[in-house]
Length: 281
Image (spheres, rainbow, N blue to C red):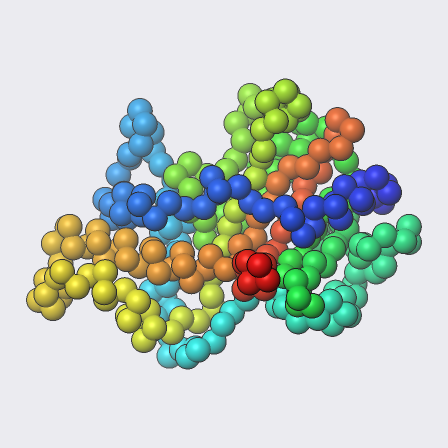
């Protein structure tokens, strides 16, 4: 299993590591994404086909949920790890993780050890104000640059094909075949990461309508009932914005971590409702 040095390397940033600002969607670009989704034609630099599978899946999932009778009024969904809400006390979370088959690290670290998604891993629980705010999952074994690139890309494809998640990226996160991960990390201090968002199981349609309609107030009821292309773009953009804000508190992301010239994947299941947001300042 993981060495003591690697365990410390994981634990040392469990409460502080955040995904980079570059992974946040820029609201000013949502309307462009909406236009491309609506047109469903190649766009982007050089006429290259841009991947909008994540946004299309997000819209489809949203409309399917709205068609269902189940509506959650006032329900606040949080990120889940193996079906367990990332919330509550650390003791309760550890008890539930043990119920999933994880065991204390025999080397005495803070980690729980076991298997996740077919890989030996070490699981850490982070808290803020005595509430669980993060589950961190680290590969238990180190690997070389070629293998870590394969593992990273495999995870990207798994998340992108999982209907429980949405992702907002014009090109996806997969690394090209000619990417020299070791060189880029060592020489250029490059950071490899990918972020996805857990979709809610149900949507409060009343809350969604209340949130979306102000941004469409420039249109009459007749224009919304018989939308032109421009109106449709604005409607989709408003929906994308609402869905992003709904899911933004439920990120699941991963990155390539390095140790002694070798690499491993670190995954984060974050409950942003419980993260520190300056309330103690």
